[in-house]
Image 1 (cartoon, rainbow, N blue to C red):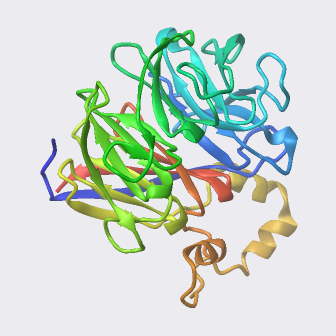
Image 2 (tube, one colour; image 1 turned 90 degrees about the vertical axis):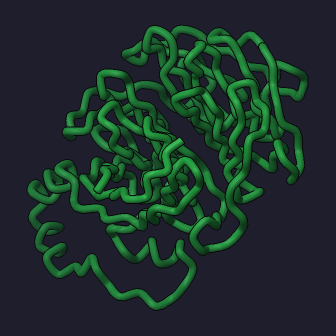
Amino acid sequence: MATQLKSKVNYVDTIGFGADVGGRGFHIPIDLSIRPDGRIFVANRSPAHRKGIRVGICDINHGWYHEFGSDGNGDGQFTGPTAITHGPDDRVYLADEELNRITVYDPDGEFISKWGEKGSDPGQISGPSGLKFTSRGDLLVVDHLNNRIQRMTADGGYISHFGTSGTGEGEFNLPWGIDTDSIDNIYVADWQNDRIQRFTSDGVFIDAHGSPGTGDHQFNRPSDVAVDQDGFIYVADWLNQRVQVFDGSWNFIKSLRGEATVSPWAQDYLNANADEAEARTRFNSLVEVDQGAPHEVSSKVESYLWDPTAIEIDPEGRLIITDSLRHRLQVYQRSNE
């Protein structure tokens, strides 16, 4: 595990633009997955504008490719997307907490299959919220409402599970996000217990970190966790409106509050809409905000993260955060001093 404390995490870029009925941009992005070639697949939840429910594909250089999926319960559709990941042969797997199923697509987003049955028996799921493939090709499914992690085959066959409801070691209270490290240790965002739990590849408890609160090492409903190749751990501290960074021994490195700039997609919009561009010249994006709940502060400061829901590490080691309520991704890069 990493123990190097002298590490910097610097803001790099912002990708995105609000697109509530589809097209180039995002609407309430809930999760993302990065294909080995660097293309970013972004699952959009968009509950108020059902046409915005889809997966959009872009890249780190602001390229836009296409989108797939739509609101509904038919093949290839979804109503409550929560998680997306890439699996064998670059197939795409998307979890739907309302339909209680996993939908499988080819690398371009064409429907292949779907599986899942609501329930609490082994192999059944209730509110799936996180997906991650192990190096062995097994799919870890965060079975949110059943308070467990299920290990499945790529086509939905049950292998095993671990976890039960509670607050003790290896127990969960509505877990959400999940990741693995370079040796297949499993990290779970134990959402309502306000902590991250770490397990061996076989689901044996290693340790837990965090407690309720707003200070360093404390969380308020952590929604996701990501681990880079050096063992550094990144936690989407959802209701605290930040991402906390730790080394592999849980030494605190930094808290990321958000530093977003205007993305090229947003700038294209302003260039094409002179009235809005002129109005923006009078907008102060660095307003002083009185002390208040982090959510209220984030709603007023444009550069801040506002409900960060998910984190992924791209092939170049960049940290990509879904800045959900601002319909964008914020990009950071960690480097050693």
